[in-house]
Length: 154
DNA sequence: GCCAACGTTGGC
DNA sequence: GCCAACGTTGGC
Image 1 (tube, rainbow, N blue to C red):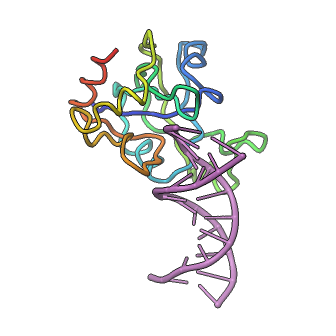
Image 2: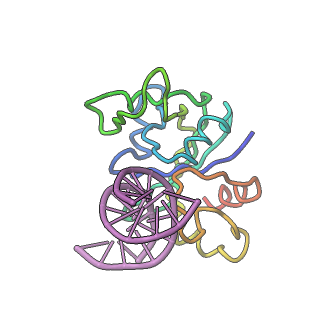
């Protein structure tokens, strides 16, 4: 079982959108970065857990925990001409982009802010990828020790 | 394969 | 809105 951190802009899709979705489950679509695509396609397993991170918003930080409920499968929004995620280079017979399904496991009573995380940048959260300068991946692996520590910050 | 131009991410 | 730090594109 692996741990992850998945970023989303709440103005596009936030934790409350997931809470309101049928079965509190949704495909994590719209990833258009090859490194992240490879993780979704090859590295995610059913039962993995991920922090749901809100980015590009007033208070960036971790809003809750989701459970991975599928392996990677093709991102059908890339095939949809009218969808914002449309990519003509991705074909159903040779899909370029992938998703996994996520189910909301827990919305935190409060957001664990980026500022709080940064307070441990030189200590317990050293080498947490989200804190690394220049990191732009929307999905990053989280090691077990970091996961445990952050979950304890709630 | 190089690299300039361009686009995107995301904190501030 | 600004801008650093990327990733991608395309001419050569």
